[in-house]
Image (cartoon, rainbow, N blue to C red; front, side, top):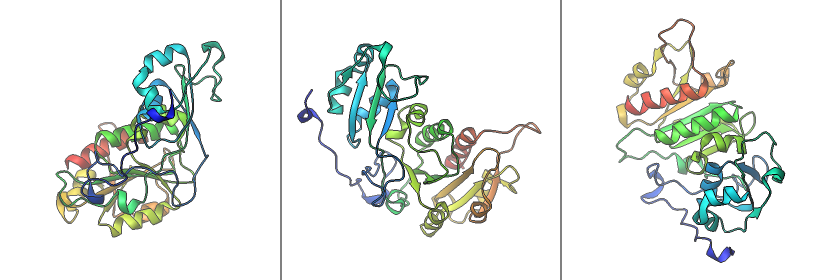
Length: 285
């Protein structure tokens, strides 16, 4: 399996310019503004995560470790697309440097982290969009399983990007990729130096910023009804970590604080479930 069989990389330009729809992602590059926010490489594991990373022509892949059973389940198409020769190992002596308790399914891939480019390009509102442009902001959400689930929901509901701070947020890891079940390869996950600066950038681009808060003064539907510009106005949804919620600075940068009504007095949603509900309500509101 030689490198000359690796498919050509597509152009980084999206059809129609930076306002393309979610199916026309701005292809990732290897660095974030000239510097990395995290390790040089990550180990992805699990059949779904590894397959999608092998099929993503923008992944810079380094090592592929498989059991014979995993290689058969991945299939020749995915392995050839990866462009690297797999190391076949005994399942009893899986040599990838990952947590032995990880549910790796006999597949692990070392690769460089993805980068999706500048917020200004990635999140530029599309004046011809049939649905509202949506961006998700995560304020210090550190659990990779929650972030992975948010990426899945964001892909389902067509969010332009998920944005989180470089520090105090879940980095791209194998656990995050496995929970995202392939969405990490397709749904932009942008980690920025300063979340507040990113929020100001989105506001300058025309986004209304709604912060989810259990004590919010109005529901998402009520807030959307008051947003100037109606359904043509893009919306950024800010979600905080479970427990502390949004930081004061983040709250202060929101145009409105909104809540998800509950039928029970003491019921609450975790951040990934809240994101899914908020995305659905915003897309259809």
